[in-house]
Length: 128
Image (cartoon, rainbow, N blue to C red; front, side, top):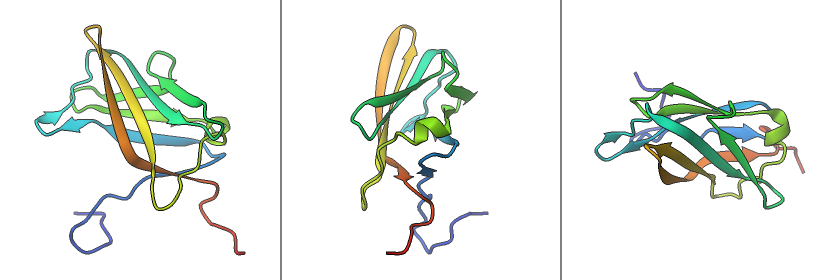
């Protein structure tokens, strides 16, 4: 059964991060040949852009990333309210990007996830 509320083609909803709120983002890495096996990853790092031009880095080694299923490339990025408050807001109609770096057998792979999350000041915009 699908969670899609629109007609075909159904595209998954882009997750929304509300600045100043705790948030957990689910990420699953997949290529044309199948899921990226992260079972033996010694490090996974996710990088998001802050409003001041600096970057927020979350790492597996420091507890900011949780590996849910290595064989299916599934992990979570855990963001605290104090961190989401500093993130750069998405500028409509585009969404924000996340860079993911992972290390397997001492080889670093960089994956740029383009337009995968919407970062907003409030879930409900205020009236003018």
